[in-house]
Image 1 (spheres, chains in turn brown, yellow):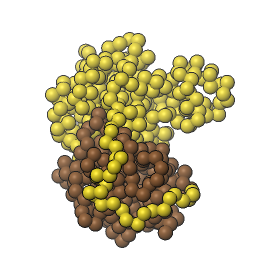
Image 2 (cartoon, helix red, strand yellow):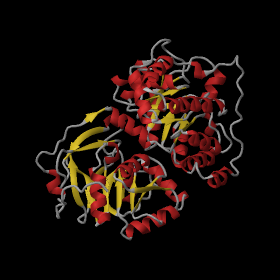
Image 3 (cartoon, each protein chain N blue to C red):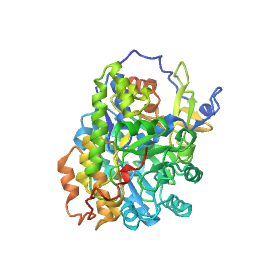
Image 4 (cartoon, one colour):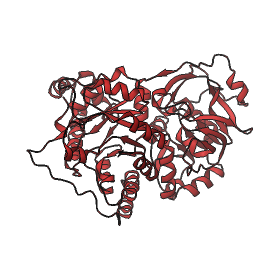
Length: 192
Length: 318
């Protein structure tokens, strides 16, 4: 099993380190030929406007959309969630999301960096301690369609969701030091 | 794969249930080291551009900048004009915040904690305690732990970097020599910082105390560097980047992102150059892509070669 981490910009190294710790073969994806070889994909946090532009200049936008639509197990965090959403509020007018996830997200919906926060999260089906949620200029999920399962919420909004083989978090499991969500995603969507 | 965790329940909860689950904790801890350093991680592999107004800020965002640095004069103009360089007008910073969706950074003078307080109150996403402005305190830097907003600080060597981290900096950048368009100083600073880190990782426990003494840095941070093989916060490059190849050079040396100050808006074609530097920073390991984006950009900023008697901004900071 080969797991890709989109490495155009953002916190891709942290996802790689978690995958290394779980014993997965992980590669960084910057070009279409790298995408073609992976069995699962992580979309990291970063700046969604920057990542969107680099998807175009690197020729990844269409192949990425096609592979995910075709059932590639994908875990998107923060900016990655914005990239996959069907509707982006408070984004740039030219920001064109991939519309693979039936949600409306508001960019920086929790506020600027001074409002970035940590909070413990109760995740459906995850036993043991609460999961440490790290929210950084996080997008706010304002609407989730009927086909979207909510796996965790915080202060009245979903923060971890699943639609088909796509998982998405508005927080950063890769910064938390807790491997459980990466592990759970891989076991459920890839190993099975 | 590691050991399996507990079995997955077949039915995921739907929205209503998740939002009303008992025990869901709505507490929030802001301003922690994790969220401060976390924003620095989100900027990794990106380009942060100096802008002086909302028009430039939009050009930077259009080109794919991960953040903008709002300031009244770019460093090359500060260098030319002389005088005292201070924090920017809050109205100008607010205009830039209103114009873009990406993070907005702004500079305060070294040691000027009141300017830093003003910037935090404006909701600035990252505060740069910067040698480009005229220092306000000849002995002390700002106590950055006491702020909710994260700070970035410049460094010329590892000791300076660790002192800034000990004061609470969430991000370190090389100082380079701002406003010159000459990459040589940034390369010197990166090589110094990264070379010493490599040497520390092969030092024994007794030698680490010697390093702490020589670097004038806290022993616990020296020990942490020895264990991690890198700084405990991200290291970006600033000072003198003018071309896509400059960005590739410093990324290959070990910088994790680049700040471009005068290099974009003092060039012939800022929009094209900005976009080219963004792409070169992502694809820094691929010379064919760096070549492709470097074609036909027009003239880079002219740049200056400093004489020993000229003002060296990098000497500011203690």
